[in-house]
Image (cartoon, rainbow, N blue to C red; front, side, top):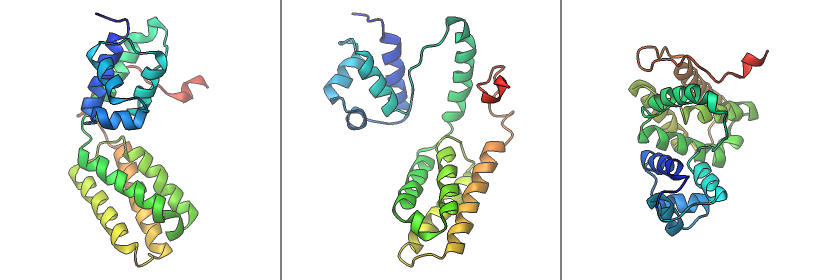
Length: 195
């Protein structure tokens, strides 16, 4: 039986599989049972709006209503965005997660609050920006340095230096010329356009 939400559930399944998240892990993240998620993905159950929102948010997605006339622009933006997101590696995701765990456990005691905030903000962007192999190596070296020095109570200067390195890495990834890799959309979601 085809439900009205079939195209949404297919996209959620593709997102789950693209992120290499099992139904069991998605169940833990969303609060829904694995059986419920399986039934939604197979199309044997029409999911409620709350279930769709829970699953989407557990996959770091949002379900929104948009005017129909804007759909070509939205699809164009999403298509160009998904092209760049495919470049992210599982190594990068794991490294960023390692750094976030370190920051949560030790970061605010190791350096200044400003350094920890810079570090945290940089990691938030590095979760979504593809890195070159060299940049990935820099990120790994930073993670290794942090993890080996946590027992030694690293100095504020060392924490500040690592936070600045991570920020420079983030800035390089943000400002990299991507014209060769991903065609730019004719549309953009810029908040500054309202001025």
